[in-house]
Length: 242
Image (cartoon, rainbow, N blue to C red):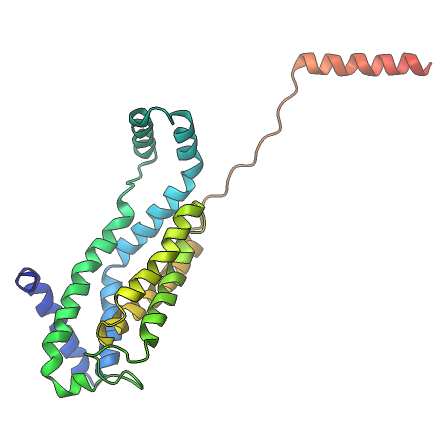
């Protein structure tokens, strides 16, 4: 059923992979080059995702204050948070869209690799120890590389998140690496390349659009009464000196 639903995307990615391989690129390099093309097309969504995540991080102090003020009234708390999102023109779900878009691409690429299993050149189109792109990495180097590159890509975007969320985000790549460990090596070529592109894109986005610096706290102004009291103390000290 999924194969029928995503048939147009399957035909597109499969055709692009065959075209790149036809230019002379080995299959593993063709998958990496296809990943660059896909991530280039998705860059506007990735930019919006990183920008949305950063703006959410900048709102954290105000969101924490709303939670503190309305901790006993969840409904009012939710209303105030949505009001704040509206005032700042932020979509709290904006960071999820690229991940949802990449899920069908992952499924389509998985079926593409399965479809190409009958090609001897594809089965032997790997590199070094992962010669068979349709089989899992026998030494599990690719799953480890996938986990580390995913953690590196995430580390850039979770700098200002709360500690609990950081722990969760750092644990997820390990879980994904274990779950996907026996997937075909060709899929890991796609995901490792995609993660490396994410690292470069996140660094570029954060360098070109750094987060807004917090406003310096202003020193409290002195009230007239405080000034008069200081003058009285100075006058008394002068009299005492005399």
